Amino acid sequence: MPMIYFDNAATSWPKPPAVRAALDEYFGEAGGNPGRSGHRMSVAAARIVENAREVLAALFNASDPSRILFTHNATHALNLALYGLLRPGDHVLTTSMEHNSVMRPLRHLEGLGVEVTVIACTPDGRVDLEAVRRAIRRETRLLVTTHASNVAGRLNPVGDLAALAREAKIAHLVDAAQTAGSVPIDVRETGVDLLAFTGHKGLLGPTGTGGLYIRDGLTLAPLLRGGTGSDSAHETQPEFLPDAHESGTLNLAGIAGLGAAVRFLLEIGIEAVRAREQNLVAQFLAGASDISGITLYGPKDAALQCGLVSFNVGGAVPSEVGLILDESFGIMARTGLHCAPSAHRTLGTFPTGTVRFSFGWFNTPAEVEKALEALRQIAVWAAREAAVSHQEAVKTWTA
Ligand SMILES: Cc1ncc(COP(=O)(O)O)c(C=O)c1O
Image (tube, rainbow, N blue to C red; front, side, top):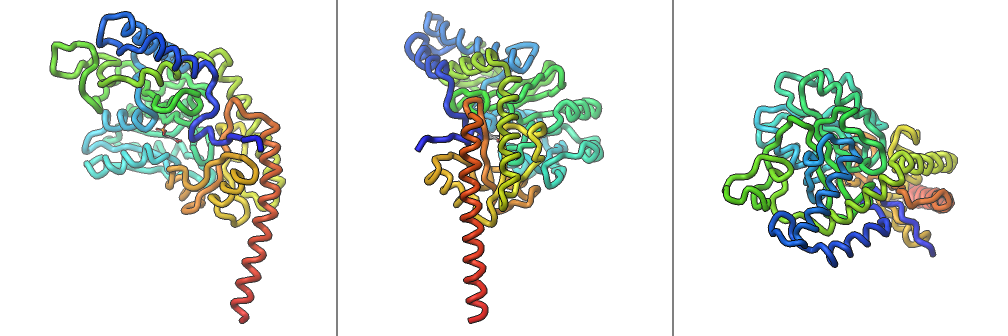
């Protein structure tokens, strides 16, 4: 049975061949620790890191590559931004569609005296800009919003939210975990202050990579302090970027792979990636809306969502549907709460969650068609199961 991978929102697969080649090249030819030694292998490793920083800056149209900081993933980048900016007495605004990598640090910060307001989104995951505007007050320091929900797929109007934040003189942090590499992002045009991204999803790089863009003029307290290979005569943390936030040896092999992945994407063009994913979503939505028993969540409009779709099949438990998709049809999907309980409460799918298909550059219309055929069969099964359990219930009741 050929395998169909529809779990690119968890981590993308496959990676471009250039990513594997870059890992090989790093271990074979670079291999040193940048900034720590002056020998050629250390210099070669430094070149790989700086090249990856440059292509990421180009991808997001950042003015200066040193404002791209490498982290282990989006979670690390979000924590760096949130703990680096917020202090007791500050007020922070966010939305009910956020991932736990935003919610959990915010709930922890709440315990330390930061006030948190969660703006309730509509049941299809839309944030009301006026509600955000009304919630801003004198102590508000930060607005945190996802670029696209990992549950509903809905894209937030990042430019409008950034403009609103700028007008109110508060910072705007965007969680681009689901969009970096698959939806165009221009930090200068939108005016985003902080952009957290992960390297292993749409950016097609290895796990253990990610980063944070910080706008010019904004400073953050470091999350970690330690050796940077720079300013080594001092026992205090350097204040210049990127070193201020890159203590300890970086994931050099991972960054080598990430750099190669971004070069691959820049060659294709992010608009082309977006168009491909949008077409797959449109194809899925059109097919699934004709299947009796399928409930779709989110905007149900490919133009308004990133490359993922969330749904349920009749009354079947999502994890059961996921198991059938894998075992009987070779389709890899994610099921459950997707680390975003608040988003599921918003959509009305808490606590069992949804089944999620997330498409990537390497998926095809033929795969979507196969998945739709699988769902047609699963929907018939789910309806039969529901009828049987209804009959059982009636029998028990009338016995
Ligand atoms: C919206 C969103 N934010 C943050 C994250 C965290 O990404 P990572 O696991 O790479 O830190 C995810 C991952 O699923 C996500 O979907």
